[in-house]
Length: 278
Length: 333
Image (cartoon, rainbow over all chains, first blue to last red; front, side, top):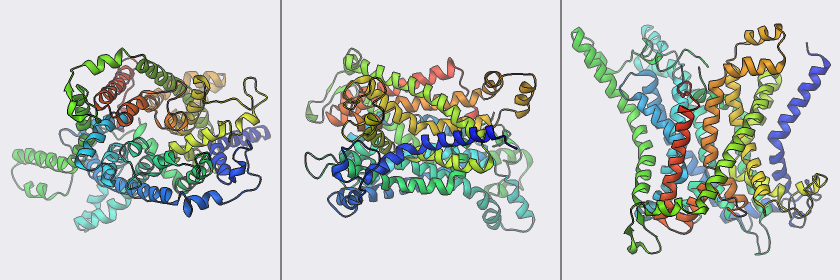
């Protein structure tokens, strides 16, 4: 049993962690409900909260800018996550289960690519994409996003797959299952959570990208949300777009919070899986 | 979390059998050729599966960096593409003798060192709280800690920027009793104050990652060792220094290396908050401004290549000098 003193310490520790994690989110959340007259008030909470900032990004002046970037972000992030998951699942399966020369090379390459400075390849890509017409297009971002999503997916999935008791597949076959049934019934249920978790982490990384987004796009044709936020302007030259940016920031943070709420256990295991072992 | 899997384990019997048709076809042939044919079939299947991912990774990184190395040897501006001339290493000479580059290098290194140090301390604190937390608090704590991890860096940058901003922020009015902070303090006008806010955002957003890695490391510290030390009368600090840290050194080193490399590439926070003004320009921003902003592809490529070399040097130092063992990061010992 805990003593009262311990209980107090636990309460304090928990509150400290919660404040640390949520305070900046609360700050931008509060700002997003401020009417433009209150944006300079210097207070934390709005005194007369309004939805006008949300109106402007979802139905008003900033609608075109925000909604198209939201579409781009979702589409590009999802496609690059799916592609990376497929490629990484195949690769991780081979690394975890087969013995072939060069599998260490594949793993080391994925480690090297994951620490690769993105900005270093932006210049050549910028030039190349302009020449071959991929500049400011979805594929023009999906391809470089592979450098973000693929290495971590291979790394994490390999760690997951190494823990799967592959003998189960044979056991099922001994029990009379066909090769396909054995795979479908014994292996897929064990492998699916790892693939899902990895995809979730890859999605976060793609969703977060700013360097590629700002360097390889120029219009709303492909510009993702983080880059679009940097281009928001107020409704007049003298007005700061603080409210609209805050509202947009809240909107793009909601999916993150929902995913975290639903899958915190999986995300934590996925993040620690690939990185620290032994 | 098992410590038994690893590179060694993959060649163990559990990993070997597969139901590929190539092998079944060979199963009836004589013993010795069967083994080598089997090995060859396995190698082929391995590369068929891992090959596409491998090729894509090289295509999106190795090819562009080679292109950057090549273009860095030219005086090449997109505004005058026909005037492209070969200048050898001249771009590097210009950059390496330019104080702007060295200043950006200094600021980047400073940010890297301070953020990683602070993150390690806060990260340890968070990891300790999560590690010792009661079962029913654990989910809540982990969920909270994952919010900064999942949030877009640009959003974090705006949140911190607006909080400290002179016109829209509340920090100045909340903390005006602190010496040095007044209602008209412009945080983004001076290098030290601007860097403080930039680093605060960077630290807030990335500490959860470090703390989760440390949490995984903490789980590997043998509990009975801690108990034994306590029974022998060790203070909490002694337990921490003599038992906990030595037993999770590998986890700490890997976390520090990954974060250091990440911090060295800092871009988003600086771009949003100051755009490099007030002496906060970092290397990534300098590269961006040179090539995308001023369309000086040759010069920008040279900065990109130098940045890449810096990352390699940091890795090299970490592995050779600090003996960071990446084997645990590979999924086993």
